[in-house]
Image (cartoon, rainbow, N blue to C red; front, side, top):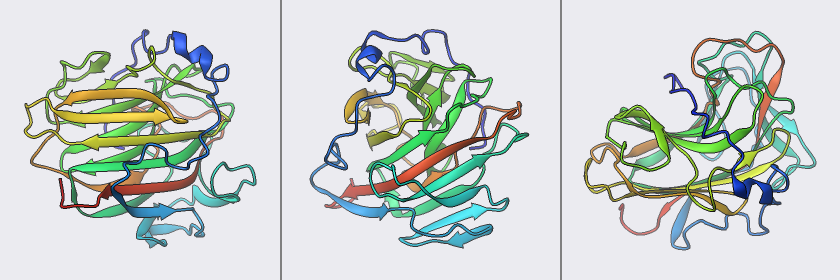
Length: 287
């Protein structure tokens, strides 16, 4: 996205105790159930397998309600027979040599049809190996957007790694009370893992199953919002006192994997890969 984030603290990138259980940093294989943490009473909003050809242009329509801004052709449909969920079609976002920090190679997005206070999303993702991390420590993967607020999934760590899978609440509300968080308050605040001993370390070159659930707080100060995320079925973050901007529910999901932070330039060609994405919302009235 468009805003720089705070630099990572040294504590974040420490290899915490439970990382040793994650297949020597790579994570266990994803569970057989495709979306194991999706609430049972949710309705599917999108179940997209990257089966469209990505053409060059802006606001290019894809299937299942998706669009893509791809002015430089850096996003393409690619083949990966080893993709974990719906091979061989995957989406590839390319960062060419000289790519400057602060933007993403392309933006694929979907309107959520109406403002959403509660939502689940999941997808399969991997970074290329090797991966040149941004000097700020920020390598963003996906976004959920609301007016003046963004919920971010990111790979965070020094340029050479290790990298942890964390969340950023770029909100107008104060969340400085959240343990194992750091950054601006209000503003872009990083939330580290707080389950099973700490952060989940991801290894470039390996596929990961990422799942996220949120429910907005009642008011901007009520401290009753929920944010949870899992990697390969393992709970990583479970925050139950998050302040959301209650006046502005979320209305768009986006893959615009921003490198940074601002400044810096790629000295190697890197890629992000996506295999399948699922968005779901409560089946009952909007909550």
